[in-house]
Image 1: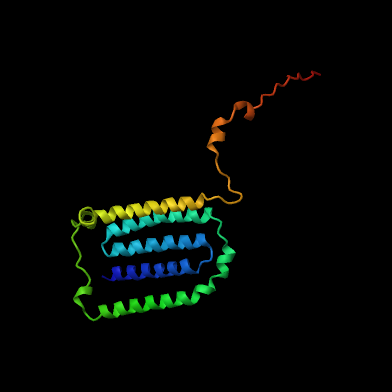
Image 2: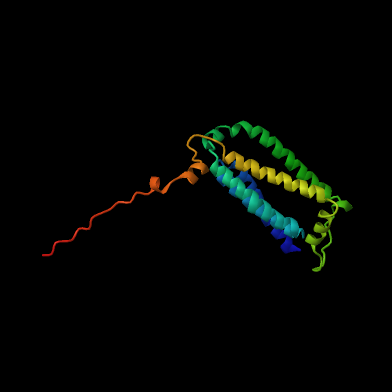
Length: 203
């Protein structure tokens, strides 16, 4: 359909611009926000492919959890932005090589698809009663349940590692001492002053 093609090119254009913003932005927070935009556009492309489960997971997991955690880590860690700017051009040749390889792969896939290979044909549209989430859930929790649990453990380790990085000891960091907080006395914190009342003189 024409409207589907127009939506695809619109979402893909915004996705490319957001991806370029991720790698070219010199502010880590701006780069993370561009990455959030890229995730949103990718989820819209999944919706066009009738992969509702992948679209929802991309928004909930990456945008709602991983990116929020990443933003907290970026803002809580002492990142030297000036040092990052100095080393930007050092990795530029490697980045151009990787980008060129990716572009060649994409062009090759597009050319290969134009040859009419049956494996790369557009899948048929399913009816409204078809549930992509139900089909994936039936496979995920039966045949690949161990891989699913392993992925959950890896994500838990990533969260613990991120928290450990933010709570490491560094100069100027204020830390709680629970023992001192519990042992504090009211006499050491509160001082009651007795003030004599003064009556105002009447004219």
